Image: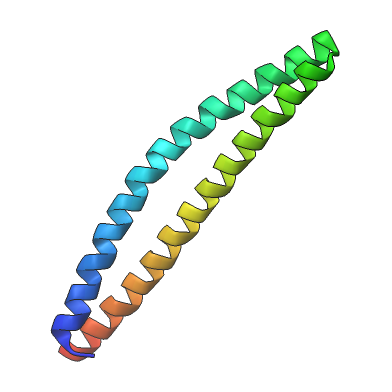
Length: 97
């Protein structure tokens, strides 16, 4: 792979990592909110013992779990990109060494 192509891919991966890290900040905030909402709904369901409160709790919990899965996807993507970036840097250093 030519040097300019390696440098281009490094630049693209650095930009994507930056975007994903910004998204991770937002997702973390949303996850915190959704987890709190699910916890409150759980307490309401325990206290009221009604089918509606139980349903609200299950729905809130599903939203929090979905956001948790999205967070895990983002973290995995960042890890993969960092690994790719390391490989590209090794390749670039091998060309100059």
